[in-house]
Image 1 (tube, rainbow, N blue to C red):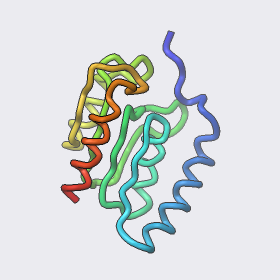
Image 2: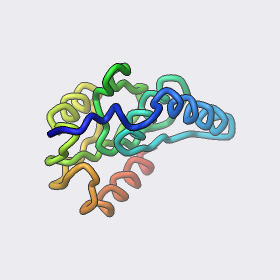
Image 3: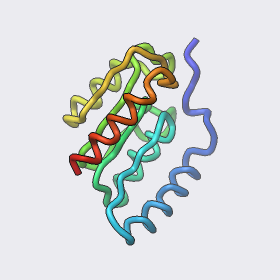
Length: 131
């Protein structure tokens, strides 16, 4: 049975919290937002309202129940996703990434990406090097 990702807390409140933090950070210098799972969704949505230099998204849900579908600012995007993600089908993320010409690393893992911490860190470093 697939767990419903949208039941993970008060998403609008989390969006507002990151929005405030990102707006304050953007006044001090360039911002790159990163997140995993729900955090990836929130980071991408906030990028539509705050100027960011890039996005690093790990296992991003493309849909969140009644919330708007995943969207992001037209900035460099790097995604790490798992072929065997039990919550978010890889095919959905592949299609989303392709539509945005995002860099996509697919790994032989599950949703937590526990076996690919180093690969994720390298992918994040590579994104930062391109900005």
